[in-house]
Image (cartoon, rainbow, N blue to C red; front, side, top):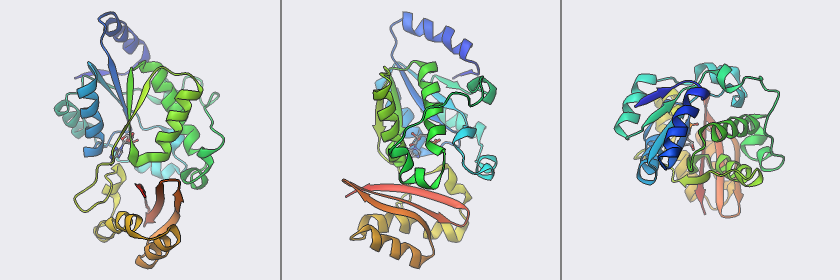
Amino acid sequence: MKTVQTVAEWRQLHATYHAAGKSIGLVPTMGALHAGHVSLCEKARRECDVVVVTLFVNPTQFDESTDFENYPRTDEADREKMTTAGVDLVFVPSVAEMYPSGSDYTVQENELSRDLCGAHRLGHFTGVLTVVMKLLQIIGADRAYFGEKDYQQLQLIRGMTKAFFLDTEIVPCPTIRESDGLAMSSRNVRLSSEERALAPQFYAILKSAPDAAMAEQQLRALGFVVDYIEDKTDRRFGAVRLGSTRLIDNVSR
Ligand code: AMP
């Protein structure tokens, strides 16, 4: 597996892949990889000639600096997982490489990005859309793979590629869960053993409660701090906190 740190180096490689007619699949991540990320890599492996994973903990999408500082970083284990999944190349840029003009230029969406998680994490989706726009422009992939676990993010990225006539196809991938139902997340390692034992109730209640208000009530009774539970069209969305860890999930209704 090749490691590339600069845009210039990637562009040279991209030219050779392009000349050879190879299709490119992109999997953007912030590292601390788990089976959810691996499933995206495996789907890209099946569908594309060249699989590129980007590993970049994007500072502009964190609304709390402690969350950024404490974000798990597991580079060696990540490499092993990517190699096993058949990833060809990992792009690991520095912050200076990704933000040569600081945050002078950003991508902002004005509706959906203010709802659900956006209402609780100010500026989060502007950070996400800006970095994803940069990665899509840099990598020039045929397809890019995103998890339905971050459903609002997926919808916003799809909307952005449509609004800006981007060439990369956005491919949704199903949420991968632990055997007890908890959606896999890099942040789960921060849960204490008591919190980890309680966490699967989030998914169970999202699925079983008759309406959003009842789900919220049941979660609060168990000790979850609820940011929101909302039913929108055919899905139920939720974000809760256990101690300092924030969990998000969504289910179809
Ligand atoms: P992250 O590293 O958390 O930014 O996630 C990188 C990509 O992996 C995003 O497209 C996420 O939606 C996706 N992802 C994270 N967790 C899961 C999961 N449990 N199942 C499927 N995809 C996931």
